[in-house]
Length: 142
Image (cartoon, rainbow, N blue to C red):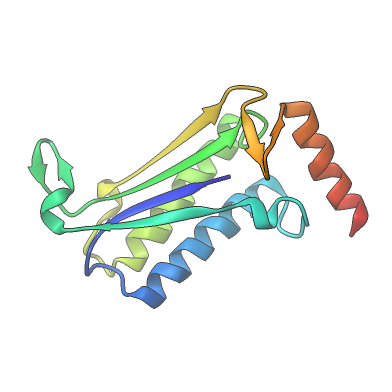
């Protein structure tokens, strides 16, 4: 479940970047109740993009802002409440880590869903049912 975090350079140091990414990962796993799932934990992946401050925009002008994008299969964060909780917590994580440089109103979070059957891990395409089976099997195997 890829997470993409985009922040301006020099807002987070490398240690803080790693902590923020770990916290975003833990937040997703916690909300989904999969913190200890052997299938899901290594499949929450992602990238961190640091861009020059003049390459991030709001309202058409350069701005200190951050973006969190979460790509998921349709079975993840399926309820409005789970999406709301992820967005709230992700916003708090990034704003807090910025030390006040990026206020919550300058953190944008979006959740993007893959079409059923278009989720791939290790070269295997999963539909929602197969993904649920893989997650369930890993929970039983613990």
